[in-house]
Length: 199
Image 1 (tube, rainbow, N blue to C red):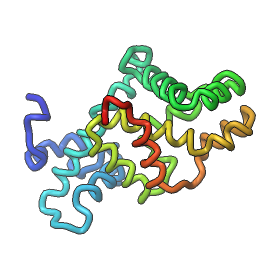
Image 2 (cartoon, rainbow, N blue to C red):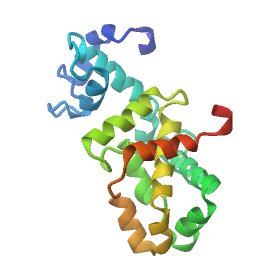
Image 3 (cartoon, rainbow, N blue to C red):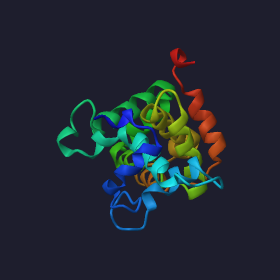
């Protein structure tokens, strides 16, 4: 039976999938579910917190599962295809920056975007900022993947001046250690990158 036939509360009976402790990675710390938990509940009643949080976590990650299957890396649903979509999105919205990164300085997007996409930006931003990003990913009608790609593209555009002034080494370092930024402004810029047909 498909998981989307269950309500969030009914997902409680499937907690054994996460070792019974709400921990998605099996190491017992519950870290993987912390962000959806806060998104759903905050300080409210938490009677069904574990089940509902697991449901949100599954909903969010279901759109990204193919990125973790090595056999699909080169397919249209694999991680390489997704990184190529990000590259095309940047070229569409800022061809000068795209050309400087990928043609002039030869910074392969895989060098930074692989981590951005597979870890849903949780390594680039602090916990509070990650909550805002995940909230956007969960709530955007275009879906988590398209929204994440717009956020990643906005990240590049926000630091374009530094990137355009940089060479391969400085740009790679900057992209692998993204500087602190105003997340509300980042999400605003990402929203502006939405395709006209989606408005």
